[in-house]
Image (cartoon, rainbow, N blue to C red; front, side, top):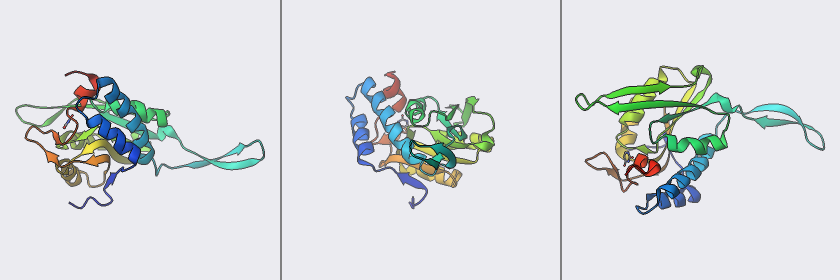
Amino acid sequence: MNTQNFVHWIDHPLVQHKLTLMRKKDASTNSFRTLLNELSMLMAYEVTRDMEVSYVTIETPLETMQAPTIDGKKLAIISILRAGTGILDGMLKIVPGARVGHVGLYRDPNTLESVEYFFKVPQNMSERNAIVVDPMLATGNSAVAAITRIKQTHPKSIKFMCLLACPEGIANMREAHPDVHIYTAAIDRQLNEHGYILPGLGDAGDRIFGTK
Ligand code: URA
């Protein structure tokens, strides 16, 4: 698969080291959550790299200058429930002015279609750049459905950020949303028959919230 330009692998050693610690099956809930927080901050730095800056006049102790500034509220970070919530804190530490949205979807057991049970995003999305977050891009079905729904609000741009992706999820996203770039800390080998990423890190939601 040609992932050039469309998938951004964040290969910084700090990101890779923390991801390794998170993957270990004996990582406690507390350390998993703390590491996710730290990783989200580091990844936020990369995913916002092309953020627009404007210039303001400021006084340093020595003289007046035109200095760059960002408008954090132009960013809408949209969490796919429930595991995406684990990424929010870290990102908001880096861009505290960002607005936040949530999308909740479940899979109908009969039709296997994604059904929306919650959708709340900031107003005036057409003035904002959206970053959709979910730790795992597995089948890609929830990310695809969430982004389809978010597109109805017409954000200026959409990026997708996850910790782990796999070829199946990337292909699904590529086909459905070729305009959406993916930012990930790793591209793992494959999905198993239960839809888990291998080698992966298990169920991200359970590991964040300690529900198993
Ligand atoms: N969701 C998870 O939490 N883990 C996986 O491996 C796949 C989907």
